[in-house]
Image (cartoon, rainbow, N blue to C red; front, side):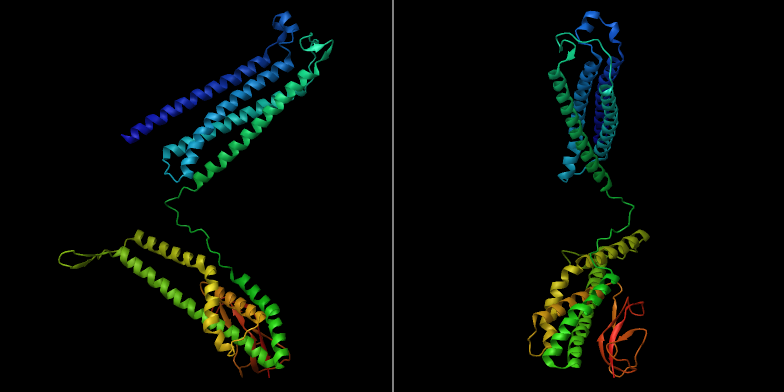
Length: 415
């Protein structure tokens, strides 16, 4: 019964729209007929009175045409506005309402295009010089056109053009909002996940990691070397920050991965194999259903959503990771507990970048060489002098992932 009522309602609205369109077309047709009339066929006295002057007659008909069109657009706007207000309020729109709004919009576009052509015709006729007999005293003094009348018609014409431009902008706005309404309608068959991640790409992270070495690390190195008068001690201390930060962030990221995977499995178990405990005998029952192909696809899609959700939140977790590192690992590196502001800035930036590197999927890898290892020319550059045996890693090399491509070389101090 509801579907039948909606059908009758849709037919009634469609019939009403057709009547309004027909009335509007009748106004426009009348305007065309008046423009094509020959003024010489009218009564000579009326013609001499200036009432049928071609120039003013066309402008007056344009005024009536624009007024009728604006009134027509006003009715359509109210209907489109009704649909858009429901959408803004979060109400559910029926297919009938969306189709009706689209139909109203298409009619508005047709009428607007027709109106634009008529305006161009009126403007062209206004500029065209038409030879007419000089009007009498009602519109002129002698053989010259009354300038006050010309100013009056020009002001009216400019006001009408301004109103049409305003209506045009309103229709464009309705068009944009209606298209957003249609595009935002979810497609049931779509399984594409939008790129919601704010996690930087590996190449961007490597660039920032190299800048950290060139800027903040260099500043801290000069400060510590001057303070301690020991270059190797400064290098060793700063590298301990990088090494501890990498191990710490990697362990935290792995714990989070296991926790998320556990949550996913528990959720899947709860939803695909539901249980029920009898309220009387307290017996527990569990479903032993076999997952269909569609259920498997839904499960895989859900897992993707969980991973995207975690990636979306990763960057917001940086302050918490930095605070945890300051409380747990920083006292192990600096036993006195005193850290200068410049050094603290370096530590916080290093922890942030390394955290964003290890939460990639798969995680990016930092690689360094221990004391006594042979030099690897393809992976490390020399800090100062050249040699074959490593004494200390100054800055680690970075790989896209374990056994993946090399993104940036490291720096070593040799014997």
